[in-house]
Every structure is written in C-alpha cells, then in structure tokens.
Image (cartoon, rainbow, N blue to C red; front, side, top):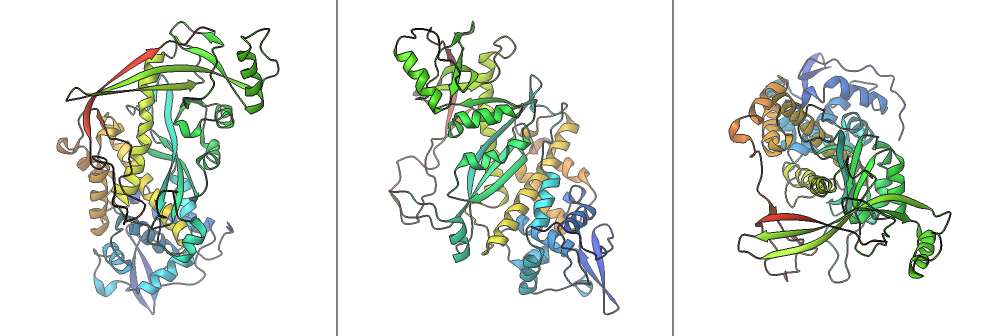
Length: 487
C-alpha cells in the first residue's frame, strides 16, 4: 500500500467533535471513541491518515478521520447496521447540527479509506504494556509472552471464499463461512497484543509466526504449544535473543546428552539430516564419539506428569515434555517452569475476549470484500488493544493483577461513554473496573474443559460426543516431575 502523504490540510478538531463548514453552516461530525479517546486521540488518527495518503484534498461530509472512528465504532456495536452504528456515534449531539449519511455513503467512505490507516493505527498501539510494577507480567525478570493461531469467520461472499477459503475436514462437510487465520503474540500477564498477522485459512501456523519474530526481544520468555515443535522454529525464535519454553510432541527424539541434578537433562534438537545421523549413533549403542558437525540446538528437557482429580474422585493423568533455552537448573528451577507453562493458556483467554466478548459469540465479520475484511479485522485488533492498555494502566496504578479486571465490564463502559460522548479520560473507566464487586477473585478455581468441537463445522451435523458441550469440572491439578533416563 502507498504511504505517500496527502497535500490536503487536516481538519480542525474540538476535543470530542470535528466541525466541517458546508454551505456556510456548521455540520458537527464525531471525533471520539468515548473513554478510549485518550489512547486513540484525533491527533493520532490524523497522523495515520496522512501517513497512509488518505487525507482530504477537499472538504467532505465524511472526512477520513470520522470514517476511522466509525470503523472502530462498528467493532463496538457488531450487532448494529451502519445507520445504527452512526446513531450510536452521534447520539449525544442535536440532530439539526449533525450530518446524516446514508448506509451507501458510509459504505463508500469505508472503501475510500481502505485498510492501511487501520494497519498503521494498530501498529502504533500494539506492543507490551505491562511494566515491572504490574503484577503477573514478569517471572524472574523475564516477560512472559505466548503465540498461537486461531481462525476468524468472515462473511460468505464470493470474494471472501476465493481469498480465504472454507475449512473442510475429511469426515465433515465444509464450514459454512470462509475463515481468516490469525496468529498473535500476546503478553501473558496483560493479554495485550504484542503483534499479530493474518492471512488465508489454508496457511499453517509457523509461516505466520515467522513474521512475528521481529517482535521478540531479549528478556522475553516465549511459551508455545506442540504446533510449533520443529527445529527451524526453535532455532529462529532462540536467535532473536528471547528464551523459549515450548511443549514438544511425544515422538520427538530428545537424547540425554547430560543429566542435570534436578532430574532434567540437556539434549540436542537437530534438523532432519543431523537427526538421522544422531539416531543411527544411538541405535548402535553410542559407540564411538558423537557425530561431528551436527546442525543442532542445545536445550534443556523438563518432563512431568499432570494428574487432574475431579470432585467425584475420578482422575486423569497425562505426560508433558517441555524444552527450554534456560539451561541452569539452579537459576530456573524445573518445578517453577512446569507450573509457569500453564500461563500459555492466557493467549486462549485473549482470543476468547477478542472473538467472543468483543466481536460477539457466533458472529462473523460483516465485510463482504477482501479489503473490507482486512480493515474490519484491524479495527477489531485496535479496539481490543486499546481496551487492554486502559485496563493495564488501571491495574498498575491500583497495584493489582490485570487478570482481576473484567474485559466485559470495560467494553460495556466504553460503549456507554461513546454513546454519551464522555471523553473525560481514564478516570471513569478505572473507577468502574476497580469497584470491589467487579473484581475477580485473587485466586480462581482450577477448572478443566474437555478438548472438543463446541460448534460443528456444519449446522446439520447433529451427532456430538456425549457430554462434549458445556461440560466443565472443578479439579485439583498435581504436577510431578519425572527424571530422565541416564545416557
């Protein structure tokens, strides 16, 4: 996309509104996002509009700045059509002084704006938001982050199907809607988006995650599941200077190169050619020296069993193997790392907040064009990130863990302040979030939910596993470290 600057001068702004002279009369246009205006101010919107080359060369009824706020408001009111979103955005102002665009005019304004201003806006807001004073963000001076992929359903149009495809499995019918694959890097302690990339559904997770590598920095501890279990992924992630703590598949070869006193051991993770040479050497009883010139990465292996005991006494045991670049067992104890890996699920909570709490359960993105989908998805990420920034700042000021603040409560407050044009800053939002009745417990119950398809790919696939939907159990989780075999 073009990043050339427009020669047109920016429109004047008055705090919560922008005024446009048209036919010698003032027409007031919205220039706010409720209490989120502090983090998405008109000056920032003007900056990204100019950087994207979308500035006006003439006075318009719907200038680019207003359209940006309208697209962001669409995310906050996903159940509303264009006209109702506009009504919510302008509810505070007298009708005689307001512009009254049609749905077609708003649609054309969205197309004229494009996706690049929203991409630049998200790029300004994304990143880590927790500080050393924010509880739950760091572990032993390492910032906890995680990455994973998910799919977002979009409108069923020919253009979207051709670009994003439908998900289909061998045993089921194709999904009812095309899907966008989204991969994000999330700060675990705040659930804020450090970075995110999207593309067609048929892309696998690692090629997208590779685009997130520049956002990894020394001082981060990256958590990931078995979907990223590969030499190339581990090598490239470790090369950024960040440390990794990843789960690996049960069948991966992790030879014991050197046992450590805490029951863990050092191993070599190799590429395919070096792995074949290492396997032959092990099959021959490790005769002679280890093969030279292996393309390998030295990692530490932590193995443990998880036992989940339900209230009725039934239990289930599973084995987990982690690999990490934290090689010192004294500085980074294995027992703490095993417990710490559970923080990886914070990215699933972040996706739930993005796809259910904000977008709405069982709701698809409304845009029927590829450019519209990109614009709407970027707006979704921008609003989510702005809300997380506001929540984290409130939690840091109060000295409590951001996990105790409710995203649902924050979004309800943001929507109300947008309708009432209340842009008084973070005070109101912080007061609402920090009320004792709105805070989550200091320590939440340990619960488990079975891995299952909660919504079938086809509305006609009625056969479901018994008890697979809506079944949650309060459990007691026990983690037991297991020692490695001697070489």
